[in-house]
Image (cartoon, rainbow, N blue to C red; front, side, top):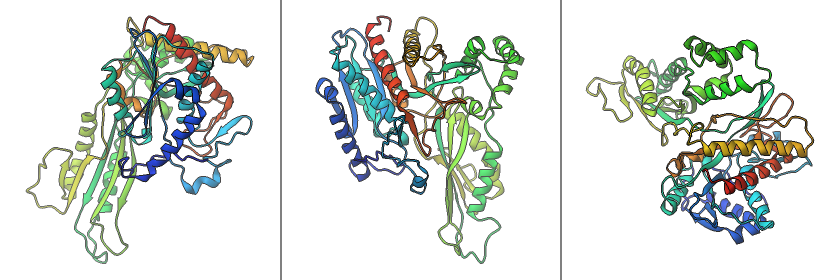
Length: 487
């Protein structure tokens, strides 16, 4: 049976929107697929569809660990279904790959966690350290009804900073500069959606003003895109830490780049040179700086009626060295001169209008479209507080080497370095539960010789061999955490 656990931006509360009902069917599937998990672990449902599983350990003095994932997936555009090699919700297995929406984001993680625990229960393993699982259902739309409520429930039971570490979806491993690097996310960018709304008098389109509200909005959006946020690499950025590992362990790093990486530790000039080299790749540039993307735009109701309102939403992912207020200030100052030139009353977020008494041909209003948040606290990776990171790094290395030994592959080496995912995760809601939060999927994110389908894209799939390694990773992580007394 097909369970399209899609989440949409306009979904209402659980009690009002019937589109949530499909999650009940998916959870019925989990009950049948993992009988030992459901007979051995305590299961609580939070806000109807949020799931908390507790595998109670025998030693209550050990801090529990929290493994997280999400049940929902992004919708499939109906107009693209014919472009899929196999139906997007078929879960089709061709002998090598499993095809379908969510095969990478994030059903492989959720099913991987449950599969690892089911297999451990089959051999009679019982943990000393409690293992908690938290599965939200609206991560793709911000986690407000899922992970946020799960976090509140967990804090009531366990308290603040209760978990030795939290692991959720995030970065994977890939080949770079001749070596394989795993980059668990130890930070996360902030988030801000800015609603830019223009109002102006309506009327018949046969007698138009010089600029309609849509024309004015267009000018504002061009102004924004022509003035992106300034981007500079700093030594506090996770990408800088990643590049230090690349410089030390990359087998094929060009001599000049390796030298630049080394010199950047103490030279501002070398740091700028490294920045210039890295920012040629738009992915690296987007990881460092505050990004902006105009993702929604609306305006007008009829071809012969002047639009009284036009609006757009600009999505920002905020740099780890910036803030929500700094991002709002940038947008506010940038658009203020245009508001004046178009003779619009200007309302920027919660600040009162400075020209409310001036004659006006309309309004320009900036406001929050969704809940905003600043960058996440950074998980320690060095020093006395880095034991959870070291345990995770050791688990990644052990899993990678073991799996490749099973596959009789020659190269068993992997380098683990701090990283940061480009998008947001449910960990936003878990900041108070642990000082050690990691965002990592033990998946190959691709290289020149390995075809990998992009997350959220057409023909999403995962190689079954990669999925088996995910199960092996979670099994190893649970066993390592159970043996550790340093976390």
